[in-house]
Image 1 (cartoon, rainbow, N blue to C red):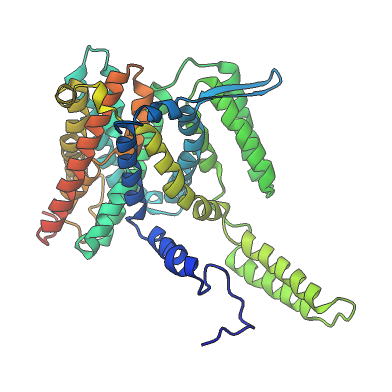
Image 2 (image 1 turned 30 degrees about the vertical axis):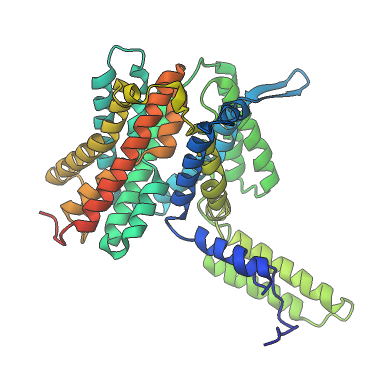
Length: 452
């Protein structure tokens, strides 16, 4: 059937070969809940393969250790490797999206209700304390003791992706519990990075960053809507925090938390403004050409529609795909490469660092989350999710042990010795793999019972 020439069609929606065979299937893939986890896993495997190629393996380290020198007079001077640019710069987008997700949950989601938020928050606390204690029990008094924050993290992309594979076997309330727990876990991980993994502090730069954040807060309070202003000041915030010694990615979290969660126009105001715009341009105006008339009307309606969606929702919708399918895979590609020829794999597997990380992620998460959930229920501090049983809680606790992205991130902050870094990465790989398999199996085979 011939295409109706009056019906506009974008390139992606056309019947050409590339949109049909590649573009539309790729778009459908990115809309799957498990897709980001699959891409992240592929990037990590690619990093390991690249780092261990028999001929070109050295190119992995050489590429990511390439130095870039950026100067702007005497004010700006950045000398960073490609890996540092990814970790200090590109990852700001990931942490900005995390900040947006935290803000949404605190203002609009499950965490806005203190009683509903209490249970996953307490469970997340157990899932951070117990893994850290397990790691410390293996490494107390050694040079590797600073890695206690590594097994505390939960990777939302992997955990949610595995839950998506289970479909209806996991109740919707259990999925929400895992999401809320992971968000609370992110808050804890951010606090740990800020308080315990900060380099030498420069107070003048830190004060500058805080003042710039205050400028953004004041502009938001006075309804400044210009995005260019926020982008410019936001970059200045990142640079000030970077120079302060506090990890620069925390600037992304702060900016995300400052993003307005309310729309400029309410639903009723949107309806009124849209009707006013249509009425204005429907009046007879013989001096305005028809096409220009339609374009003016469309521009006005687009402005009204845009301001009827909160900046938080707009930014999260726009940046989440970039964070999930570009930033995080590049981060994994830059950080997951362990050169096995440079270490004794057997010694690394049995090292106190790898054991502390892997056992912390698997046993620590299961025991900590389940125990703290039980305490919260027994003490009346939280409300058990409807339709969710203890088998769900234990299975979800195991999935929370998939700590890939943030665990790798903290590893890069915790150690200067590359041997400890590689041992920790091996522990993350093993622990996350076992946690995912155990969690999937428990949730797949669990009996359908209510809470005991």
